[in-house]
Amino acid sequence: MNNNKNMNKYLPICNNKYLNYSCLILIVTSVLIVIYSLNTTSVAEYSRTVSSLILLQFLSFFAGSFLGFLFGFPSHNNNNNLLEKYQRNSSLKEITSWLTKIIVGITLVEFKDIFRYLKYIIHHLSYSLSKDNGHTVIIAAIIGTFFILGFIVFFILSVTTIFEELVVNDKNIESILAGAAMNSNELHLDNVDKVLDSDFTKMNPKEKQEILEYVAKNGLDKLNYLMTKRLAKFLYVIEEYSSAAEAYEIAYNKNNDEKYCLLNACYINSKFLKDFDNTNKKLQNLIASAPNFAPAHYNLACNYYREYSEFNDEPKTEYMDGLKAKAERYLIKAFQLDKGLYSYAKQDEALHGIDIDDIFKKSKINDSNIDNDDN
Image (cartoon, rainbow, N blue to C red):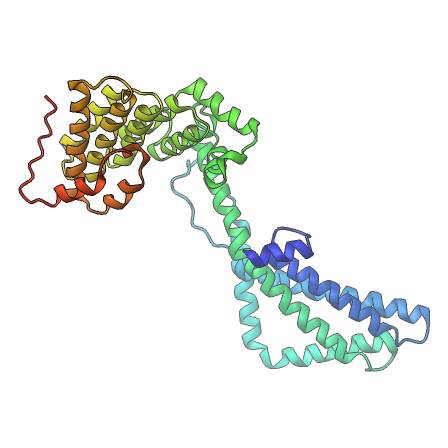
């Protein structure tokens, strides 16, 4: 990837590094042809030699490219998932397969004569340029180099770029035939992929506004759990905390194995929305269904201590002391289930003020009994 960027820096012809390398070779050899043609004795002969050799290199390149395309063109089966009324035209695939077999067959049968014909062509081209065989070396070099170069480049493009385009187009066709592309409730996937694969903070306002308008129009429950989770991440980054928490919870409801989605929702509700009661109840329910899930105990401890810290400047009450005790109790249980949380807790600002080392020592006591009943 870095090589591609470096090539684009010096030769920004296109985004494909293989085509960039090919263009560079074409430019260099064209310069060499111009220099070679200076040996001619007249302007007319010079023009004829330069133009003929440059045309020969392009012809050789495209001949090799054609074969590379035939040999590398992706094969695909008829997609039975597509509606029977419409099918992809497979003529090109059949033609390329047919021509490839013919070319391979002829090559195997006539292999001995191929070089004889090639030698005849080279000498004939040389004679047409200067009435002698003085150009045979450069003509042979041009034909061999650019035929092989064209074959390699377009074979690689066929099995990479063209294959990728066909896959994307097949997905689009299937979406259209299934009617999904006309569903106004579907979020434009390119927008979601873009905001997830890049730095959210670098999105332009128009892209952000498009997704916010989608949320306002269609809500948060129209996508599958994975896309809903991605949408929640985007909403969190742009500080739409209420919608982000709701989206994370919807993602969890769609797939209960995504427990961290519920933890994210509870974290947002607790830290930013100060909804401690509902958050604690949801985490308690999660612990009841998955009692050995250490992150749930840890997050509940953080929630209790976060609520305790909200009233830290107020006179101490029995209720506040109970919050701190619950935080310590659940933190001990979290350490018992996963001692790796200790290093994380040492740096967690949500637990600032708790003696983490003391809690960790208590968690090592085998007969520690953690009462999860908050009454």
